[in-house]
Image 1: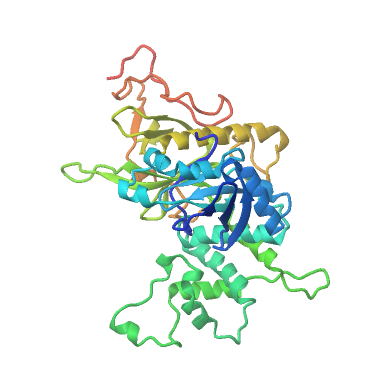
Image 2: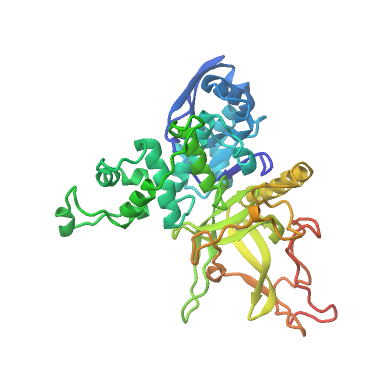
Length: 465
C-alpha cells in the first residue's frame, strides 16, 4: 500500500471504530456493517468476503441506500479506528486490510503495543478525498447532500475544520434550521439552543459558567456570547421561495448552503495526518521541543494545523511548494516542505520539517493529487472554485474574486510560529546550511512555469559560508 492507493491519517470526529465491521465470518458468508457519517449502520450480507473488493462493497452500499451514480465518485470506503484511518482504493480488499491492521499501525503510527493489540477498524462510507468541490456543488440528490453535510458538520463540531467564530455561528445556524425547523420568534429559541449547544457549535465555543454563579443561572438567563451569536445567525437563515411563491426551502437547500460555506475553508475535504514540528527556540537556553500538528492534504494543497490551538500554521497550494520525504534507518521519517518567504526583506527558501511515520503516505498523496489536477486541466480550464491547477496569468473575473480574510483568521498562515530552516541570498553569499545546497533540495514540484514557487539561487562562484 502506498500514498497513491490510499490516504491515511489521524482519526476523525465520529469514530465508530470500537466496533468491528465484520460481525461474523464463515467459510462463504459474512455480515458486514458499514457506518455512515450520521452513525447509522448499513448491514450487508455478503458471500465470500475475503475476496470482495472495496468497489463491490461500495456498490452494495449504494444499492441499499438507493443513491444515484454520482455517489460512486463522491464517496469512498474507509477503514477507520482511533489510531489510523485509510481511504480504500476500489481494488483493495477490505477484509484483507482489516486482518493486516496491526501491521499498518506499527508501520504508520507510534501507538503503544497494548493499544495496537486491541485496536479494531470499522468500515465507513465517507467523502472521497479526490472528489472535486466544483462537482460537489452540482449535486441535486438530497440524500447525497445529507451524507456530505453530516460528515462536514462532524468535522466542524470536532474542530477538525478550524473555523472563525463568525463562520461557526453561520454554520451552526444552518444546523439549527435543519434540526429545529424555520426560526419562529414566538418559540423560546434561546433555551432550546442552550440545551443542545454542543450540537450546533464546537466545544470551545460552548463553555458555560461554572461554580457559584452557574447555580443562579436559570432557564431565562441571558444567552452567552456563543449562544447569542448563534441565535442571531439562526434568525437570519434565509428561506428560499419555490416557483409557486409559497414553498418552504427543502432540507437539500440548507445542506447545499452548509457545504457551500464549508468550501470557503481551504482544508475542506482533506485527508488528515498526524505529525509534529519543531517549536521556535525560546528563552535563554533555547529550549523548543515539538508541537503536534495535523497535516491536511487535498486536491487544492497542503495545510499544517496546530492540533491544540486549532488554527492554521501554514497553507500552501501545490504550485507554491516543493517537497520530499525521508525515512532513514534509525531515524524518524520526515516530510519536508519547502516554500518561498523573506527574512529581513531578503528572499528566502523556507524549509519546514514535519516528523511523522505517515511521511511516506503524505508524500505519495501530494504527488497523486498533482497528477489528478494536471490530468483534469484540459477538461476544466474555467473553474468556479479556485484550485491548484495553475497559477493565474491574469486578474480573475469579478465572480472569482478571492474571499476576504479576517485579520487573525484561524485559516490564515502563521509562519512566524514555525521553526524553519531559512536559505538567504544576500548578494555576496548564502548563509551556511547543512547539507550544502546551491538549489532546491527537492525535485518534486509542479513543472517549471506552472507554479509560483522559485528557488533562491546563490552566486555560482561563491561557497556557502
